[in-house]
Length: 361
Image (cartoon, rainbow, N blue to C red):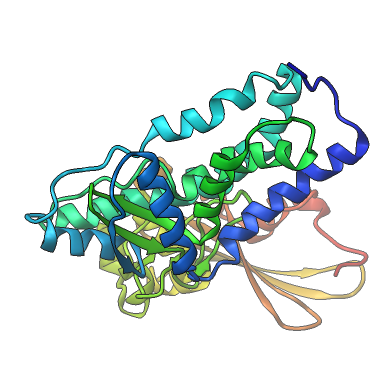
Protein backbone atom coordinates (compact mmCIF):
# COMPACT_ATOMS: atom_id res chain seq x y z
CA UNK A 1 0.00 0.00 0.00
CA UNK A 2 1.17 3.51 -0.79
CA UNK A 3 2.28 5.45 2.31
CA UNK A 4 2.74 9.16 2.86
CA UNK A 5 5.96 9.91 4.75
CA UNK A 6 6.59 13.62 4.08
CA UNK A 7 4.73 16.75 2.97
CA UNK A 8 5.44 19.29 0.27
CA UNK A 9 5.07 23.00 1.02
CA UNK A 10 1.74 23.06 -0.81
CA UNK A 11 0.53 20.16 1.32
CA UNK A 12 1.64 21.91 4.50
CA UNK A 13 -0.11 25.11 3.42
CA UNK A 14 -3.37 23.16 3.13
CA UNK A 15 -3.41 22.29 6.86
CA UNK A 16 -4.57 25.68 8.24
CA UNK A 17 -7.09 26.02 5.39
CA UNK A 18 -8.80 22.74 6.29
CA UNK A 19 -8.66 23.54 10.00
CA UNK A 20 -10.28 26.95 9.51
CA UNK A 21 -12.95 25.55 7.20
CA UNK A 22 -14.19 23.23 9.94
CA UNK A 23 -13.93 25.83 12.67
CA UNK A 24 -15.99 28.20 10.52
CA UNK A 25 -18.56 25.46 9.98
CA UNK A 26 -19.33 25.72 13.69
CA UNK A 27 -18.58 29.32 14.67
CA UNK A 28 -20.16 30.91 11.59
CA UNK A 29 -23.18 28.60 11.47
CA UNK A 30 -25.50 30.89 13.50
CA UNK A 31 -28.04 28.13 14.08
CA UNK A 32 -28.66 27.29 10.41
CA UNK A 33 -29.50 23.61 10.00
CA UNK A 34 -29.96 22.37 6.43
CA UNK A 35 -32.90 20.05 7.15
CA UNK A 36 -33.10 18.45 3.72
CA UNK A 37 -29.39 17.55 3.79
CA UNK A 38 -29.62 16.34 7.40
CA UNK A 39 -32.61 14.09 6.60
CA UNK A 40 -30.86 12.67 3.55
CA UNK A 41 -27.71 11.81 5.51
CA UNK A 42 -29.56 10.48 8.56
CA UNK A 43 -31.44 8.15 6.24
CA UNK A 44 -28.05 6.97 4.94
CA UNK A 45 -26.75 6.47 8.49
CA UNK A 46 -29.80 4.50 9.65
CA UNK A 47 -29.73 2.40 6.48
CA UNK A 48 -26.06 1.68 7.19
CA UNK A 49 -27.22 0.27 10.54
CA UNK A 50 -30.09 -1.72 8.95
CA UNK A 51 -32.64 0.59 10.57
CA UNK A 52 -35.65 2.26 8.98
CA UNK A 53 -35.66 5.99 8.26
CA UNK A 54 -36.52 7.68 11.57
CA UNK A 55 -39.02 10.41 12.32
CA UNK A 56 -37.09 13.61 13.06
CA UNK A 57 -38.05 16.28 15.58
CA UNK A 58 -36.14 19.54 15.22
CA UNK A 59 -35.18 21.71 18.19
CA UNK A 60 -33.40 25.04 18.53
CA UNK A 61 -31.23 23.93 21.45
CA UNK A 62 -29.95 20.74 23.07
CA UNK A 63 -31.82 21.46 26.30
CA UNK A 64 -35.10 21.58 24.38
CA UNK A 65 -34.21 18.12 23.05
CA UNK A 66 -34.04 16.89 26.63
CA UNK A 67 -37.31 18.52 27.65
CA UNK A 68 -39.22 17.05 24.71
CA UNK A 69 -37.67 13.63 25.29
CA UNK A 70 -38.92 13.69 28.87
CA UNK A 71 -42.42 14.28 27.56
CA UNK A 72 -42.12 11.49 24.99
CA UNK A 73 -39.94 9.01 26.86
CA UNK A 74 -42.73 6.49 27.48
CA UNK A 75 -43.25 6.05 23.74
CA UNK A 76 -39.63 5.85 22.57
CA UNK A 77 -37.39 3.66 24.69
CA UNK A 78 -35.25 1.64 22.27
CA UNK A 79 -31.94 3.35 21.57
CA UNK A 80 -30.22 2.91 18.23
CA UNK A 81 -26.55 1.96 18.41
CA UNK A 82 -24.93 4.61 16.22
CA UNK A 83 -21.75 5.08 18.19
CA UNK A 84 -18.14 4.12 17.72
CA UNK A 85 -18.82 1.23 15.35
CA UNK A 86 -19.67 3.61 12.49
CA UNK A 87 -16.79 5.97 13.23
CA UNK A 88 -14.23 3.19 13.59
CA UNK A 89 -15.44 1.44 10.45
CA UNK A 90 -15.04 4.57 8.35
CA UNK A 91 -11.57 5.32 9.75
CA UNK A 92 -10.18 1.77 9.78
CA UNK A 93 -8.79 1.53 6.26
CA UNK A 94 -7.42 5.06 5.98
CA UNK A 95 -5.11 5.52 8.97
CA UNK A 96 -2.94 2.47 8.32
CA UNK A 97 -1.56 4.06 5.16
CA UNK A 98 -0.38 7.33 6.67
CA UNK A 99 3.16 7.61 8.06
CA UNK A 100 3.27 7.90 11.86
CA UNK A 101 5.14 11.22 11.97
CA UNK A 102 2.83 12.76 9.36
CA UNK A 103 -0.24 11.43 11.16
CA UNK A 104 0.84 12.75 14.56
CA UNK A 105 1.76 16.19 13.22
CA UNK A 106 -1.47 16.73 11.30
CA UNK A 107 -3.56 15.17 14.08
CA UNK A 108 -2.19 17.83 16.42
CA UNK A 109 -2.59 20.65 13.89
CA UNK A 110 -6.12 19.79 12.76
CA UNK A 111 -7.98 17.37 15.03
CA UNK A 112 -6.57 18.51 18.39
CA UNK A 113 -6.96 22.20 17.51
CA UNK A 114 -10.59 21.76 16.50
CA UNK A 115 -11.32 19.61 19.57
CA UNK A 116 -9.77 22.23 21.85
CA UNK A 117 -11.90 24.94 20.22
CA UNK A 118 -15.23 23.08 20.04
CA UNK A 119 -15.33 19.70 21.75
CA UNK A 120 -13.47 20.20 25.00
CA UNK A 121 -14.34 23.82 25.75
CA UNK A 122 -17.84 24.14 24.29
CA UNK A 123 -19.67 20.86 23.70
CA UNK A 124 -18.58 19.21 26.95
CA UNK A 125 -19.37 22.31 29.01
CA UNK A 126 -22.80 22.66 27.43
CA UNK A 127 -23.61 18.97 27.96
CA UNK A 128 -22.61 19.26 31.61
CA UNK A 129 -24.75 22.38 32.04
CA UNK A 130 -27.75 20.69 30.38
CA UNK A 131 -27.37 17.62 32.61
CA UNK A 132 -27.32 19.78 35.73
CA UNK A 133 -30.35 21.76 34.60
CA UNK A 134 -32.37 18.68 33.70
CA UNK A 135 -31.60 16.85 36.95
CA UNK A 136 -32.23 20.00 39.02
CA UNK A 137 -35.73 20.07 37.53
CA UNK A 138 -36.35 16.39 38.44
CA UNK A 139 -36.22 15.28 34.81
CA UNK A 140 -34.35 12.33 33.29
CA UNK A 141 -31.24 13.13 31.26
CA UNK A 142 -30.96 11.18 27.99
CA UNK A 143 -27.44 10.77 26.66
CA UNK A 144 -26.75 12.45 23.34
CA UNK A 145 -25.34 10.42 20.47
CA UNK A 146 -21.62 9.68 20.61
CA UNK A 147 -21.44 10.03 16.84
CA UNK A 148 -22.71 12.37 14.13
CA UNK A 149 -22.39 15.70 15.97
CA UNK A 150 -19.87 18.52 16.51
CA UNK A 151 -17.62 16.17 18.50
CA UNK A 152 -16.71 14.52 15.18
CA UNK A 153 -15.46 17.69 13.51
CA UNK A 154 -11.85 17.06 14.56
CA UNK A 155 -11.27 13.60 13.16
CA UNK A 156 -13.40 14.22 10.06
CA UNK A 157 -11.39 17.38 9.28
CA UNK A 158 -8.21 15.32 9.81
CA UNK A 159 -9.19 12.72 7.20
CA UNK A 160 -10.74 15.36 4.95
CA UNK A 161 -7.25 16.83 4.67
CA UNK A 162 -5.87 13.57 3.29
CA UNK A 163 -8.84 13.16 0.96
CA UNK A 164 -8.15 16.60 -0.52
CA UNK A 165 -4.49 15.73 -1.04
CA UNK A 166 -5.79 13.20 -3.58
CA UNK A 167 -2.87 10.97 -2.62
CA UNK A 168 -4.71 7.84 -1.48
CA UNK A 169 -6.96 5.89 -3.79
CA UNK A 170 -9.67 4.82 -1.35
CA UNK A 171 -13.38 4.42 -1.58
CA UNK A 172 -14.34 7.62 0.21
CA UNK A 173 -18.11 7.19 -0.26
CA UNK A 174 -18.96 6.35 3.39
CA UNK A 175 -16.64 9.06 4.63
CA UNK A 176 -18.21 11.66 2.35
CA UNK A 177 -21.70 10.65 3.45
CA UNK A 178 -20.74 11.04 7.09
CA UNK A 179 -18.99 14.33 6.32
CA UNK A 180 -22.15 15.67 4.67
CA UNK A 181 -24.13 14.78 7.79
CA UNK A 182 -21.88 17.10 9.79
CA UNK A 183 -21.95 19.79 7.11
CA UNK A 184 -25.73 19.97 7.39
CA UNK A 185 -25.19 22.17 10.46
CA UNK A 186 -26.22 19.61 13.09
CA UNK A 187 -25.09 20.41 16.62
CA UNK A 188 -26.20 17.33 18.58
CA UNK A 189 -28.98 14.76 18.69
CA UNK A 190 -30.45 11.87 20.64
CA UNK A 191 -31.22 8.82 18.52
CA UNK A 192 -33.74 6.02 18.94
CA UNK A 193 -34.51 3.11 16.66
CA UNK A 194 -37.33 4.91 14.85
CA UNK A 195 -37.15 8.42 16.23
CA UNK A 196 -34.51 11.14 16.42
CA UNK A 197 -34.49 14.55 18.02
CA UNK A 198 -31.89 17.04 16.85
CA UNK A 199 -30.55 20.45 17.86
CA UNK A 200 -29.13 23.14 15.62
CA UNK A 201 -25.92 25.01 16.48
CA UNK A 202 -25.77 28.09 18.72
CA UNK A 203 -26.34 31.49 17.16
CA UNK A 204 -23.74 33.20 19.34
CA UNK A 205 -20.47 32.08 20.93
CA UNK A 206 -17.96 34.11 22.95
CA UNK A 207 -14.52 32.90 24.05
CA UNK A 208 -11.35 34.21 25.67
CA UNK A 209 -7.89 34.15 24.08
CA UNK A 210 -7.45 30.53 25.21
CA UNK A 211 -10.67 29.49 23.42
CA UNK A 212 -12.54 28.95 26.69
CA UNK A 213 -16.15 30.11 26.99
CA UNK A 214 -16.03 33.64 28.34
CA UNK A 215 -18.13 36.81 28.30
CA UNK A 216 -18.36 39.32 31.14
CA UNK A 217 -21.15 41.24 29.36
CA UNK A 218 -23.64 38.42 28.84
CA UNK A 219 -24.06 34.79 27.82
CA UNK A 220 -21.08 32.96 26.34
CA UNK A 221 -23.31 30.67 24.26
CA UNK A 222 -26.81 31.47 22.98
CA UNK A 223 -29.15 29.19 21.03
CA UNK A 224 -32.15 30.21 18.91
CA UNK A 225 -34.67 29.51 21.66
CA UNK A 226 -32.60 31.70 24.03
CA UNK A 227 -31.17 28.81 26.03
CA UNK A 228 -27.88 30.31 27.17
CA UNK A 229 -24.73 29.29 28.99
CA UNK A 230 -22.82 31.85 31.05
CA UNK A 231 -19.12 31.45 31.74
CA UNK A 232 -15.96 33.19 32.88
CA UNK A 233 -12.75 31.74 31.40
CA UNK A 234 -14.39 28.36 30.86
CA UNK A 235 -16.13 28.16 34.25
CA UNK A 236 -19.89 27.73 33.85
CA UNK A 237 -21.61 30.01 36.37
CA UNK A 238 -25.19 30.85 37.41
CA UNK A 239 -26.99 33.22 35.03
CA UNK A 240 -28.19 35.48 37.87
CA UNK A 241 -24.67 36.94 38.14
CA UNK A 242 -25.31 38.64 34.79
CA UNK A 243 -29.10 38.98 34.77
CA UNK A 244 -29.40 40.35 38.31
CA UNK A 245 -26.05 42.11 38.54
CA UNK A 246 -27.69 45.42 39.50
CA UNK A 247 -29.37 43.71 42.47
CA UNK A 248 -26.27 42.06 43.96
CA UNK A 249 -25.63 43.31 47.48
CA UNK A 250 -22.57 43.52 49.65
CA UNK A 251 -24.02 40.87 51.99
CA UNK A 252 -24.67 38.53 49.07
CA UNK A 253 -21.09 38.88 47.85
CA UNK A 254 -19.52 38.45 51.29
CA UNK A 255 -21.72 35.48 52.26
CA UNK A 256 -21.12 33.65 48.97
CA UNK A 257 -18.81 30.76 49.91
CA UNK A 258 -18.23 29.47 46.37
CA UNK A 259 -14.99 31.09 45.21
CA UNK A 260 -15.84 30.63 41.51
CA UNK A 261 -19.20 32.36 41.88
CA UNK A 262 -17.57 35.18 43.84
CA UNK A 263 -14.90 35.47 41.15
CA UNK A 264 -17.65 35.61 38.53
CA UNK A 265 -19.39 38.46 40.37
CA UNK A 266 -16.06 40.29 40.57
CA UNK A 267 -15.44 39.86 36.82
CA UNK A 268 -18.95 40.88 35.74
CA UNK A 269 -19.31 43.89 38.04
CA UNK A 270 -15.76 45.12 37.56
CA UNK A 271 -13.37 46.50 40.14
CA UNK A 272 -14.97 49.94 40.42
CA UNK A 273 -18.43 48.53 41.13
CA UNK A 274 -17.00 45.95 43.55
CA UNK A 275 -15.21 48.73 45.42
CA UNK A 276 -18.47 50.63 45.74
CA UNK A 277 -20.37 47.50 46.67
CA UNK A 278 -17.91 46.50 49.41
CA UNK A 279 -17.65 50.06 50.74
CA UNK A 280 -13.87 50.00 50.53
CA UNK A 281 -11.94 52.24 52.88
CA UNK A 282 -9.43 54.79 51.63
CA UNK A 283 -6.22 53.78 53.40
CA UNK A 284 -3.90 56.46 52.05
CA UNK A 285 -3.62 59.26 49.48
CA UNK A 286 -0.41 60.64 47.97
CA UNK A 287 0.25 63.65 45.74
CA UNK A 288 3.12 62.83 43.40
CA UNK A 289 5.10 65.42 41.44
CA UNK A 290 6.58 63.75 38.37
CA UNK A 291 9.71 64.84 36.53
CA UNK A 292 7.63 66.02 33.56
CA UNK A 293 5.75 68.35 35.95
CA UNK A 294 2.59 66.24 35.96
CA UNK A 295 0.94 66.08 39.37
CA UNK A 296 -0.73 62.77 40.11
CA UNK A 297 -3.08 61.82 42.92
CA UNK A 298 -2.72 58.17 43.93
CA UNK A 299 -5.12 56.56 46.39
CA UNK A 300 -4.97 53.20 48.16
CA UNK A 301 -8.23 51.37 49.00
CA UNK A 302 -8.88 48.19 50.96
CA UNK A 303 -11.93 46.14 51.89
CA UNK A 304 -13.10 45.82 55.48
CA UNK A 305 -13.72 42.08 55.11
CA UNK A 306 -11.13 39.42 54.40
CA UNK A 307 -11.64 36.56 51.95
CA UNK A 308 -10.74 32.92 52.47
CA UNK A 309 -9.84 32.21 48.81
CA UNK A 310 -6.89 34.62 49.06
CA UNK A 311 -5.69 33.40 52.44
CA UNK A 312 -8.05 35.42 54.65
CA UNK A 313 -6.64 38.69 53.35
CA UNK A 314 -8.25 41.94 52.34
CA UNK A 315 -8.77 43.00 48.73
CA UNK A 316 -6.82 46.13 47.84
CA UNK A 317 -6.59 48.50 44.88
CA UNK A 318 -4.57 51.50 43.81
CA UNK A 319 -6.60 54.24 42.16
CA UNK A 320 -4.69 56.26 39.56
CA UNK A 321 -6.02 59.42 37.91
CA UNK A 322 -4.45 60.28 34.56
CA UNK A 323 -3.10 63.86 34.83
CA UNK A 324 -3.89 64.71 31.20
CA UNK A 325 -7.30 63.08 30.65
CA UNK A 326 -8.66 62.67 34.18
CA UNK A 327 -9.40 58.99 33.48
CA UNK A 328 -9.53 56.82 36.60
CA UNK A 329 -7.80 53.45 36.75
CA UNK A 330 -8.17 50.78 39.41
CA UNK A 331 -5.39 48.21 39.65
CA UNK A 332 -5.36 45.46 42.27
CA UNK A 333 -2.34 45.32 44.55
CA UNK A 334 -1.09 43.31 47.51
CA UNK A 335 -3.23 44.03 50.61
CA UNK A 336 -0.31 44.56 53.02
CA UNK A 337 0.44 48.03 51.66
CA UNK A 338 -0.43 51.06 53.78
CA UNK A 339 1.30 53.72 51.66
CA UNK A 340 -0.35 54.68 48.35
CA UNK A 341 2.92 55.63 46.63
CA UNK A 342 4.58 52.40 47.72
CA UNK A 343 1.60 50.40 46.45
CA UNK A 344 1.68 52.28 43.12
CA UNK A 345 5.40 51.68 42.76
CA UNK A 346 4.88 47.95 43.42
CA UNK A 347 2.82 47.84 40.21
CA UNK A 348 5.62 49.38 38.16
CA UNK A 349 9.33 48.87 37.52
CA UNK A 350 10.19 51.50 40.16
CA UNK A 351 10.89 51.45 43.85
CA UNK A 352 8.91 53.86 46.04
CA UNK A 353 11.72 56.44 46.08
CA UNK A 354 12.11 56.27 42.28
CA UNK A 355 8.42 56.48 41.37
CA UNK A 356 8.51 59.46 38.99
CA UNK A 357 8.05 59.72 35.24
CA UNK A 358 9.72 61.74 32.51
CA UNK A 359 7.10 60.66 29.97
CA UNK A 360 4.02 58.49 30.17
CA UNK A 361 1.18 57.50 27.83
